[in-house]
Image 1 (tube, helix red, strand yellow):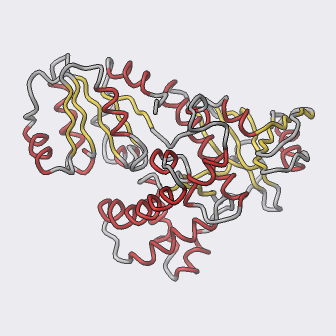
Image 2 (cartoon, rainbow, N blue to C red):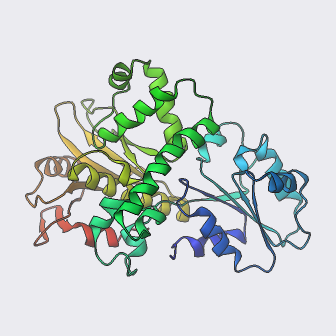
Length: 374
């Protein structure tokens, strides 16, 4: 299935290296190989393969290679300096595409040897905006809520096939990816933290509360969640606080890249789907334009909350409230739009009639999601 970022990636390869990162099994390798069809002599090398690893270490790919795809290279010790050397001494005809299932910002902290040498693209699960013309989508938002947006379960013939994929996927994330990423001495505790997060989608997360439930320290909980974020299992939506009174609650909310992992009612799954759709929009615009687009939320200590705040270059663009079926204007959304003098949008899954009330639009979810950037 077509991925919309492919054209921008092709253009960026003509200027610099491209880093393509995102969750495991989201389609990075497939997209990289689609890009390679435009080249005469592409080479794909995966650092997890012993044979490919030897080629990488000795830089022994064919001289005529015009596109070099390096997968999971971040697992190589000293990979940044290695890649800097390859890029700086390459033939001008050689383009380099690096893919991986861990966040690049995890590695930015250890030096800046690659600054100015790459463009970043983050590939996330399918969204309505991306596949709205596809026959597979066919106007059914429930397919995303039931299966999530990862290619294999989304395109699977049956729900059972999608569930079997997810069972293997979630188990593999912990046993393989996490343990590869960092040595973990208490696997069971980490598993418990992940399961608790699956039940807390849409609510501010207290590290201390989770630590008490699992009987580990808050520092360890924070470490585990940081690993989940680095490996694209969960993502954080932080509170917006600029120009807001100190009564703003500071705890983050956490959502899953795979909506199918959410354990909760229809409202929790729907809010997670809206969150990942808005995140994909924000990251896509950031990667394509270089401007900063953020996804945040507002919640006061007295319980007033708006689900999401779309921030562009430090300023609120829109406040967003997610509702499964409630067409009644959200009092909290009205409160914050009036206080901040910003536009709001109430995104409703099941809605008979769209309407506008002052600064707030009440719209069908599908119509809103189709118009996002990605």
